[in-house]
Length: 143
Ligand SMILES: C[S@@+](CC[C@H](N)C(=O)[O-])C[C@H]1O[C@@H](n2cnc3c(N)ncnc32)[C@H](O)[C@@H]1O
Image (cartoon, rainbow, N blue to C red; front, side):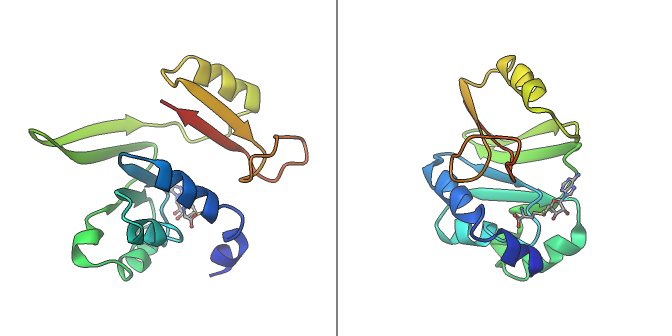
């Protein structure tokens, strides 16, 4: 409840707008109790989520119907798997992700070496520049 109150108005509209523009599937890492997951689902987003905390997901599941509950799972971002339907049945991919802090220029250096077509870095969810007094560190990568 406290987190919900603190963050709503900071990032939820941003994420809902991004999700709306997304044509494919959306995966929310660390979905928690579904602060904007529920809104995204009600707007017909093909969204999935996972969280390391079973108790957070238990709260989220009380807000979902039986079919929707299959969209969320208990997993750790360090190594997680994502399964989706494709023409010839189900496909699964395992992803590994180191969980640590990144400095801006280190991250830029790493992104430059990926297959992303472009990226942008902001200091908030309104698109303002990242600076030493920014409260957020938002990185948007596009394929
Ligand atoms: C700050 S909350 C954000 C929840 C939700 N995304 C939101 O905006 O309301 C961060 C969430 O990440 C989850 N989390 C922390 N470490 C994680 C990990 N290693 N793998 C997956 N989820 C993790 C926590 O359990 C928590 O629910």
